[in-house]
Image 1 (cartoon, each protein chain N blue to C red):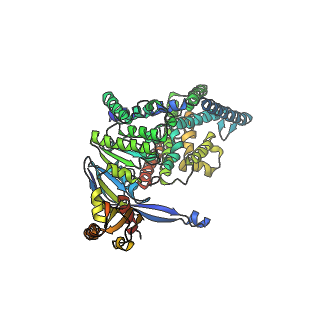
Image 2: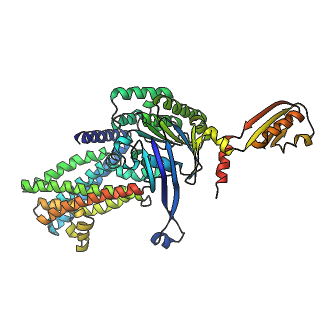
Length: 263
Length: 321
């Protein structure tokens, strides 16, 4: 078991290294993409600051809490993009038939199609995001337990994100007709930049129980500020576990139904 | 080594009706029978050629044997494994090369992919170096491995694909149209490589190709498949005995003779003095040769088998609906 984990880790790191080397091939692209991401961050940060500074509390959230929520969203979103960048390239792999050559390799295909293309440009942003997030969190009076629960729920959010990404891969196996399913996920996730309470009750319900972006982003921050009930904490872990299992099952069905290009 | 029993594969294909509403809400799917109860066995160190027109089921068979596709029904065992289970122990012993598809990292030199495969297949340093040296030597490609893949020609890239696929010395190699799109020199290099590789590493190789020349040059055993059914499974030489009923008789005439005498053999398929070629039924050969010896003055006589391409073409035509 340990040997297998070690080997998988080694392959993952090698894929990461190759990805870094590939990224390094185009310096102009590095500059443009990084600049674009920084501008996007600054712009949205500005919007949130503007909205919340005009009103003391929106839907029960203060400015500082909203900023932490926004930074938490950015951390989870950037971390997912960093780790799961290869998902964005999955459809071309299916269409070109190159996926077949991945499926005959003696490792779990997720090592390649899920985490095989770590985006180091996102790493450049993730580190400052992380420290800005910590800076804002430690401005508040936070207990060790709530901080620990916050971190655990952020990781739980990453598990939900993993499940979404696996589902996108599975969908790519089943049909090539849905173009850029990952962008649908991104669009929905973007709604999680704001507390789910600002949405109407029905949408808030959907974002908690059906497409749980609220569980991914709002719940950890609520836990940080003691807004989250015990039941919701338990529910968070349950839903992430359930979605992960479901997505893996979906992937397995996808593999069975996969027809391969030109087959 | 490979056992296939009653293998069937059905693809579900979405059929557009042209009516937008129907196409969105009431989709129609059609079952396409790609393989129809196919059975065969392949032993160790065999090189088998799979021949068939487009959509015959060649690639589907290879993809099922390698675990890429899930069979609809039937039994498949490769090296004692059920391929679709994708056990690491199984995948470490096989390799798949597909013409015009690549596993190489596009922006980096091929050596980077080789180093990646070294870890994936858990090759020790010594074995990796030895195999890499051997394989690059067969292709005379020592310098190419350091060149970025995107800078290589198609032929050079295929050579690198082969090296990447065979570094771990797989026991079974699936080659799907490995020479497609290549110029004649690259085709030749790939053919020689396959031959040398099999000789050196005693691998079992299954090859599909549109170029009959590939199969003729490399395989002793031929499996002909059409519309998901095996039409023939046997040696290249036996196919002529089984399916060819004609021989070609070529004569170089000594002098011009009356057409009535010459055409008594039959209508020639080519006649330009002094050469004349007849296509005759095998059963008539003894009488025809006797007649020629008795009646026709000639300088040279040659009797040839029907070309294998022609036999296969006829076989496919006879199995049209």
